[in-house]
Image (cartoon, rainbow over all chains, first blue to last red; front, side):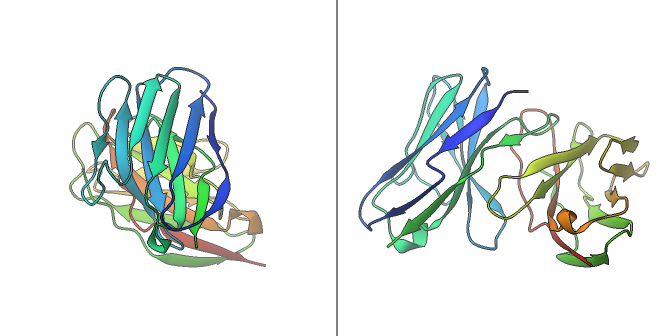
Length: 113
Length: 109
């Protein structure tokens, strides 16, 4: 199984700014997923990222706010744009799922002040 | 995607066996049942996966009745380090997971 690493692990950002979170997998994977986990809550899927195509966003999430890049089969980024305190959360990337084991990054703990 | 229902929280004592049951009445023919464990400040970690009957690995057992409308995760002889949130997920290959609220297990000394 591939190892998945995510960075930064945490950040404190000023409102109105943007943060880009990177997710690296050490072998090629078709789909990668981005989740948000608010304090004390479960994971909510933001979008699915396939290499070579636009990401597919879930209801309530839009590309202007959470642009995603997937330049190759081992890497993806999620940007949280024009941040507000309501964006304070943990953001996780993953791959796999369904009938196969899913692997998750350690998460990025974002605090917006 | 099949919706899952599981208890919000459970308490247990060290050394006991813990059984967490998940209901998934609308499970589809091709869906697998997978359980994940999440500790604070970490991403979820795979525990076990099954399709039907019983699956056992080094950390847990998964019991799935013939109708597959529910499943039970069994953790033998839990320790304090098993305190975590446990998620039951159902899905087919290629589908993304939809996480429910999970079961918050507290293991007491």
